[in-house]
Image 1 (tube, rainbow, N blue to C red):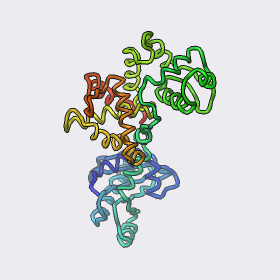
Image 2 (cartoon, one colour):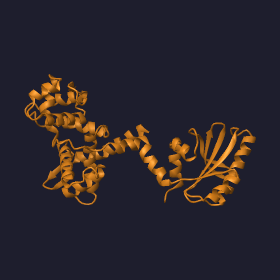
Image 3 (cartoon, rainbow, N blue to C red):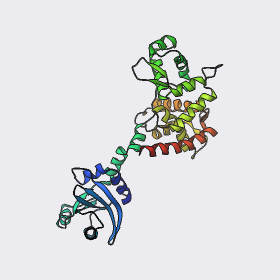
Image 4 (cartoon, one colour):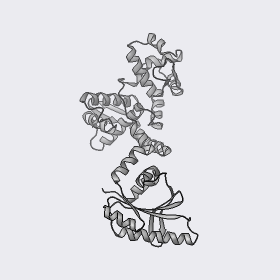
Length: 340
């Protein structure tokens, strides 16, 4: 395993429950300091646990005899600090964490008062990815295929919501099957244009939806007006993780941007293959048809918003698309930082 020791240390510091498990403790330890400069060197981690201090020396390699001497020197320095009133009183329990240690090596450490545990850095990294909230939040949201090919296809029912607040009533007003209407409602909900709970009859415009409806093209209500495009584009940029559909729109533009580094314009065949990887849907969209449909739909949404352009089987990024990508990266970073 090739990894910096500091990276494992970062994870253990941010995940006391993981360290509790590795050290076989009953409760989570509380960090006092890390990378503490002392006369004999730099101590990795020092924790408070019940009435004790836990000296934790972390290694990303297998056990070596020299680690024992290093830890004993650290313990001696800390004991001196306690005697001089520079450190909390309490029994100091040293721990050595390394990637592997034999039973004999652990017994050797134990004779010196050091508890030695081996750990797997791969498991630590896996824990970090699965449990750190911003990353888990980012990884869990993935684009979905609802079967709506363009954004304007929800107009035939959301404009009725200025006067109607019932799904049952919408069925008698909107053409098409109940399943199609349900998909449109679900799609509009993903865009946050409506407020609606699945299997509920009550449905109404959201604050965003009300503003969107106000900006409709009175001459061609079936199409998106420039004002509606601006409203949705701004919302996607500022709320990239708001829903699966919104993240999908952001992802198709980012995927196109990434592929454009290799060739431009981007061939649709490339985008179809790459988008399933980029969106985290490789195992969901396994058939050619599933990949094709999803990529076509999301690229259509991006074209509707003026972020991409199509010519035959070639995909272009528009000036708004370039600006969108830069702004999106900033807002994604901010959203993840806020969640930490």
